Length: 597
Image (cartoon, rainbow, N blue to C red; front, top):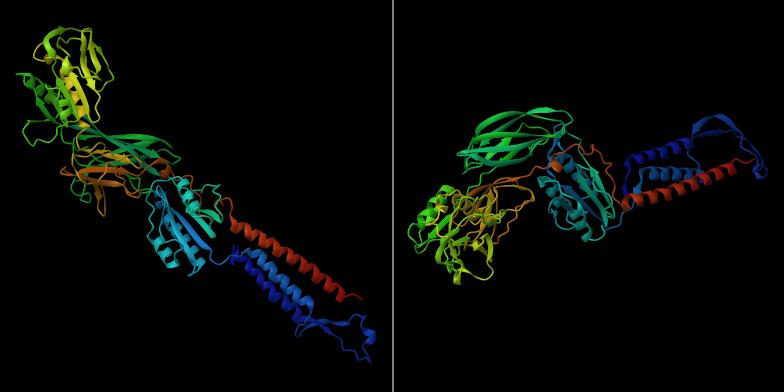
């Protein structure tokens, strides 16, 4: 049995009060008579004053004591529990439980509440602890002991973004009907309508103000310069000015001392956001942005990692004299590039420029551009029909170009080729559908005409390099938020891909890799013989950082539908109240008979 209102047991003090009244009963006046036969119906004649005497063994006394006992039980709201019942505690692991108020964090309040419930259940109780988060999991054995439950509560650490309760409630339903109590401990109101038997939510904590760094980017703004930008969110009801610091971190050691770059004062409106920007030299080091500590520390810093990617490898196989030099000059002018030879053992390039169409199928390159055609060249002038949204032709102006066009015949006219740039005479640039990579055919001789001297060729080479960078092994995005996909390209024949930080490491041999939901900050990405690349995973979001809708510290969280414990206590209390009323009426009847003349 458990008492939902233990203070109601103070009503048991009525028992000694009833006994005291029966001890201090009235004194009787002695009267000598010959017989009592004629005195049964006569009232007792008592003298004033009281004396202490043993109570009479009367039905009225026992009924009064029983009525007082039942009244105490009604006030204490007892709940009868069957043997084999269990206690299930679900701990919300949102970052917001790290917020502190009055020197204690909300996580400390949740731990204290869980420990009290475990102690109340007793050392022999069957207890199961679950963690609510993006991936709900069990922290103890199914129906484990109190000692294991206390250890799980002590080591539990809330370090995840806020997550919906649907997955956790579904996990609890899969276990079947609970044979006891289910407690959901959080800092926010727990969703109603879960229809879990014996389940109730408890919200702990107090509403608080908070500042947060929620989003950041790094982008190149010019030769040797980059711009670091972040959004500062104000969850308070007043406008405030906050200082934001930018620091560069060493690549090799995330824990080494940082180097401060700049500071900036930012005014943030009430309930709004402001953008802070730092312009700095291009660096391959991670950058940390931070604001002073407030009620929630986890969202006061933001890590931004650079994209460290080697330049695309390019192989040029052009037999015509001078054609290869034209493409080398155009590609080097378009961006950083590594031009390889066709020697044996050369790794598969990201871009291949060739004059042999059979290399389109043979080559393992990500992008292949075959230049050539059949017959004598025909000089073509604009206008040309171009597909402007195609990534290879985006921004290319063909207005002043004079093309030496080669007719597509034989192997230069494969089935399925789709024209992307055309003239009245026929296609100038076509794309061949391929299962892996991109394949293009350019029907032009760059040694003739004026394309080699027009802006169209460097722009075309720039687009080729940008497409080729998507095939360079390594990270495709170095800064991620929780829930975003880790995008990377695996080198050909590579084994494991690993992501690690001090005390944590996860590897995968597939093209998908998932990080633990309670991990954030800076990581090191390693793949095959590639140099390690920094990776930043952010944890802050608006749902977790907004502390205004938290419940005050209270046990009055909304009970979920189907709370059998509360319902059983109410039914048992009503039953006891009916018995108490029946006893009170019976005692009144007995007392009335005993005093009747």
